[in-house]
Image (cartoon, helix red, strand yellow):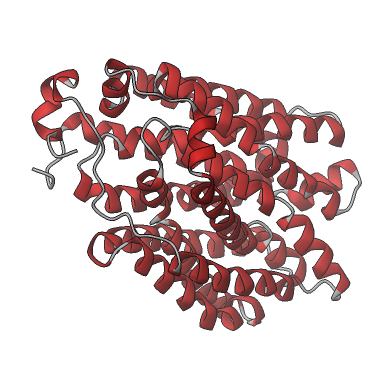
Length: 415
């Protein structure tokens, strides 16, 4: 039955969510350390935000390279290789002697980071029962704020003891996830079926045929990435520089809004199974608009915390539907590469966000709240419009040959 998961399906979900969580943890360590790194290299914060821009800008390259490899060689081995590469690069970032070297390492890290979302999400969506995709979509996307949450806890607890370089060394620990995947996670049954039946996985002919879908998905994901990065990346800097909160207070607020983000992703992801993907996204993004003043213009730490909680509940609530939505939109044979590729192309378009907001804030007397509110409000409206004119995918089925999935075949009949 769809409602019951096998132990294998649970392990796949753990691996997929864990991989994306740990990747996000490595990425978000940087957003807490912008001012510390700027001080070390004797530069302004906008110079250091180039690391965020470059990381986001090259993620489409990683999505394409690792995604195509996953279509050819399987989701499981490519995911393990992906985790190894980004963990090593995170470790190397802690040893960068100059800002230039640091930026080069973050470019390489961005390529590795770009591969994880598409490969891990396709492995999960192709393995769980269809009626569980909304829940798993929310769980998977909740891994992103969960990684942010872990980064905020580690930052608050350890930055004084180990410094920013030490935190990047701690960021190499995700390599341990490879052991779990090696022993506990099998290959995607959908990929095994496609290989057995020799389905065409040539990306460019499919993109030429489905070019309207590709353009729609890229523009939608650009708005989504402005929505998430526009409300997250400079928020710790906003708290430290504009409100002069100490690291402990910044950490507590970040923990609070990331808990909200996880709850929001799971809530709206699950809700999308009942009301449809499009409705769930539109409701979440429109509810973020009345929260903007509380989130960006409050003065006390309590009210800022409440605003941040509500904002990230809505932002990641909308995001919680996206893994299922993009995987269901993707044609057969492209699920490991196309969702991740359009997601990361959207990231490329949104990669200017941190620098854009930092410059906008400086031109308005250091008002980061104003800069973040302008971006978040604009893209929330754009997302609602794009999704309204899109199509719903709720209930779509993937092709699986039961004979290829061994003892778990009976649990996947309805895939």
